Length: 89
Image (cartoon, rainbow, N blue to C red; front, side, top):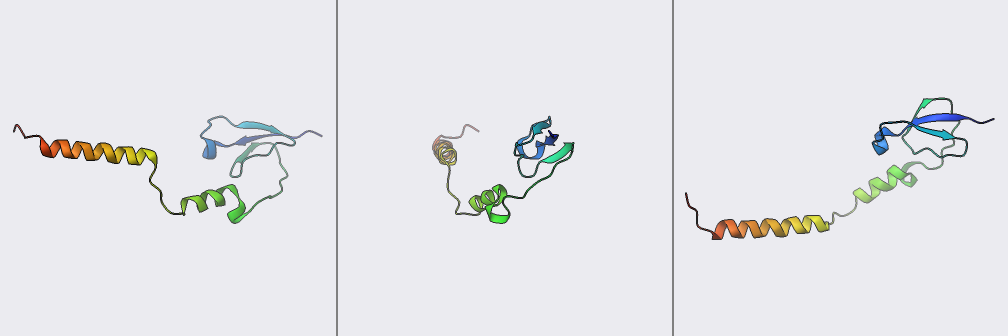
């Protein structure tokens, strides 16, 4: 027997339309069954789940990204230029 379910993954992926899944497909954790029935097996919980791994990465030491480094350099240049140029007011 083939089960067809429609899952909404909007909260996870931002997709506006629901995704049709059949037997053997693995929905993302946090998705919602919009239409149909489903039997599920929990494969990971807590720190071993996708959300748990993401939370662990975010709780680690903060690193400065390349974009942040570039913006800091640009800001420094603009500050030096604004301080060194005479005001015409």
